[in-house]
Image (cartoon, rainbow, N blue to C red; front, side, top):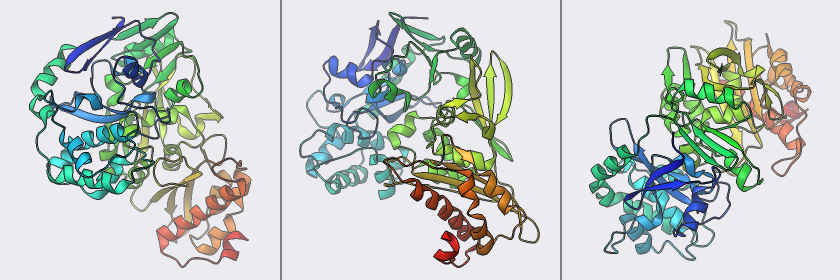
Length: 488
């Protein structure tokens, strides 16, 4: 154990002692002579604070990923390489190819957002799809969806990205990779990390046994994986978090098990690492995951954190509820499996016992003949919170009647929830427009949605019904029923 945080910055190992565990990387940088990274929103939405973290992948190569420094706690970068916009230009003042492309394409006006765009493009510059010529406009848009520009306009920024991709050459970080890897290996930890500052403490265990022991010793601790939500508790709510337990270094929590009929996802698997598996095995859910935050959020955020956090508008849970997912919970090394639809008891209340944590999520895959789909409705496609999110799993019998319909909804209640009245109303009914329209009023018994800044209660109730009709059309291609039939 040690009381210091170690990372690589500016080509050398930096050691920070006696840091408050909830000090954000952005605040530390700006207080220590690196003001290039900016604070815009302090909640991971605008991208002005984007920095890049580097770590060693399984093959020994350095992997670069963009993250939001404004909601990332400093101890969470222990053992990693931290790059800011100040690092990109060479000692001789020569601009990095990303910076040069931004200049050549006149892609900056006020410049406040520019460092964040540059760092997001730097991470894209080191994406394998660029080197292999597989960079499309869709990939560029996805890489920049977490960066907001208020004055330049996006066209010249996109032009800079295309130029960077078309003229991609090795940069000085490629050429220095062996030295960077050596520095990272020199600060690699074999044991856990504990950082204390006054009464506050931060713990980063390395094994599931260490994690279980810490949770037992600190049953009221805040568990954090990517801090994409917990970070806001500090930056927006000003909360004090006296004890933090960081899950991202626990080896067992990064495992992804691919079985013939189910996936098992460790609680610390990031969305970015999960996406390739979902694209192969559950593409409908993969499409939804690409709309959870932006690249910076998905590089840090985890499916396990989304589930354990239990936000009523968490996008992953409706799909998991429809698929019949279950959670493997661990308390002192004793495990139990609980269906997700029995996990939530109310707003931000769940079935976790003191000292218990989510170890992994088990997701059954749709069987042959079953149909699954999920959709998110929000004001913007990217970087927006759901008004309503819905998911459906349909099983028909041999006569075209509903053997089972599982429907999961988010944004409709205090927790993500199934729609039991709707499911019962559809049981045994033909999978037709008339039967579905007749069952829609059951949703009004399942949910009494609220009105807030994202949507009114009437809008949510209507969208919830329309998404079921969309699923009908998606699975049958039937003609669209009349508005009178659908809305009564």
